[in-house]
Length: 232
Image (cartoon, rainbow, N blue to C red):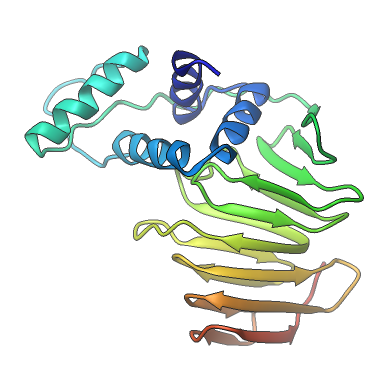
């Protein structure tokens, strides 16, 4: 895809105005390589900068202006901010199938994205660059504001996560009545609505595992935790 095309999509996504098809194009672009993910995180960090204005900020619809501001901010070693317009996303039900896989991406009326796998395992990248491997016949959902105001996903089934480190935003997996919180970690989660147990396996990093009745922290690598949970 041409550079200007993906830049336009990124700008629309960060302002909350990307269509479902554009969001899928962005996900595929992020999956294409580490260079793309690094570029996206750099732009996202700048876009979400927390600043105060002495006057009404300017809306920057043109992505070239955004890139120019990034270059200026780096050379001056200062952070500038952009005015983010409220997300204007139509409340429509859209179902799109990613070509070449059995992974289905849905966008529903609550402005949430849901990945559903069929008879094969699927790999995809979340907007923050986190890599996910979703097992067969499983489901993972997240809101349209993921990466802009929090990083929370809901999981039914089994998935492997390689989470991008972000000091400001923890990565949270909701699985039934349990919640798994991380900063930057490689781990897997297995849960299903039809079962009453949830298993977390830690590959590296650390996670915090919580339910209404208990809280468990896993710190060392190659550790597993299995606890009863309420899946409904």
